[in-house]
Amino acid sequence: MKLITHNMLTSKCLKGVVTGYPLAINATDVKISEVDFNPEFISRIIPKLDWEVLWKAAESIGHSEGLPQTIDPKFEDNEEFLRKAHKVLLEVEVEEGYLTCPESGRQFPISKGIPNMLLTEAEVQ
Amino acid sequence: MSALMKLKTLEGYLQDLSGFTKPKIQYEQYETPAHIAAVALYTMQTQFEALENRLVLDAGCGPGVLGIGAAFLGAGFVTAVDIDEDAVEIINENVEEAEISNIDVIKSDFLNCNTFRWENYFDTVLMNPPFGTKNNTGIDMKFLQMGLNLSCDSVYSLHKSSTRLHIQKKIKEWGVKGSVIAELRYNLAATYKFHKQQSKDIAVDLWRLTHHT
Image (cartoon, rainbow over all chains, first blue to last red; front, side, top):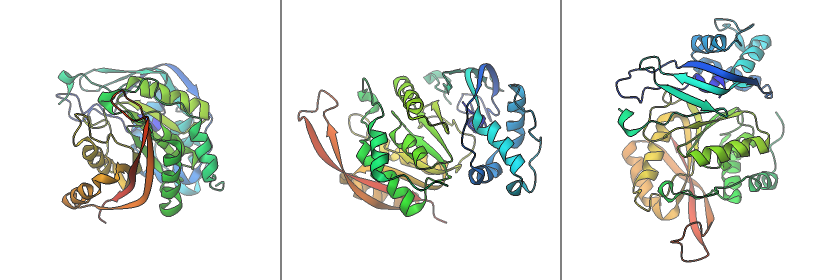
């Protein structure tokens, strides 16, 4: 699971949970995989993100180094910024660990890089 | 950006992906044939620029033919979702084999769960939904509706041509735009025991649905 994915995941489907966001990350195995840098795509995705959640997620797994806490207003022209965003969004991957719902404490395991967001029938709203 | 991969090359790569080892009838797991997927993806990119540099969701991905194909055609990032344990394992292996690095797989119930934080988030949503036969009546329409909720631009979906009028009626009801952008033939090999014939051709439509702007 890459952090771009973490940025969009919630547990709001759980009974009694209102926002379910952001999910806390506990990682036992993090890997870095090389992904082609695509500045056009990164520029397009940045306005859609919750940047604060991205930054905190990166920090919680020890990969926020060099990542600014706020978005550069002129990020489209700032290649250094885009490269850092690219790395944190697409190259850092949680292989093993779990996500935790901030409201209920329900844990969602991540195994072989795949978060398991499936719920039992009794857990669904 | 690199030039668009040739259709034949794409089809060849998709042909090499592994399929379902034990297809499950409750999920109507039929594979999307490489040829259909390649033509569909190629149409989306060449006619609508729906893949290159886009944020793409493959809903009910199965072994991932559509999502992986989208990555081959230059998608910025692909999220692939499936409810089935075996399907996510297979797509994960396929992603590794194909040496694609800008895709994530999530095990989740696409229809019954608010897995995603935001509506209208993905540029392009791809799906080859269950046909909605075999005790699943209407599931194809639920897939389409959920796809529309999650897309900010367009949903591309494969459906039996026999359902065309029904879909036309539905999209009118929903107040969205939609048209068939390609007519294809799906050679459905005998996947399940109840298939009496060895294989049969089914006419399918590639639909493109967009929100009113």
